[in-house]
Length: 70
Image (cartoon, rainbow, N blue to C red; front, side, top):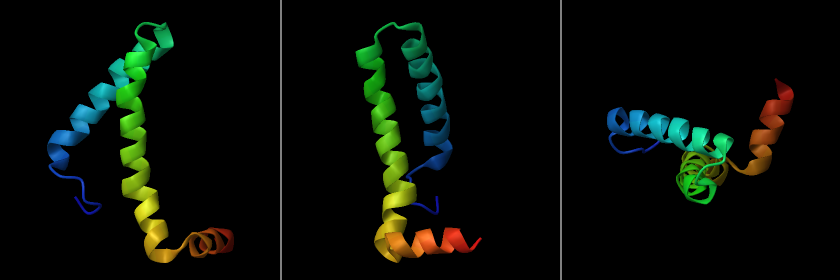
């Protein structure tokens, strides 16, 4: 909810099931091209909501120097 995902109580199980089903299809080798599309969308949304927004607010180097100090 804090990072801006609408209806997180609905989206979290949906994303989990999508990752399990599509990941299994990719590992088995069935419908790999079709199974990769939802996984790529999931990865893009995760990167955007957790990393890119933070980098735009704080800057990339501010995050790197903070991690180096720890």
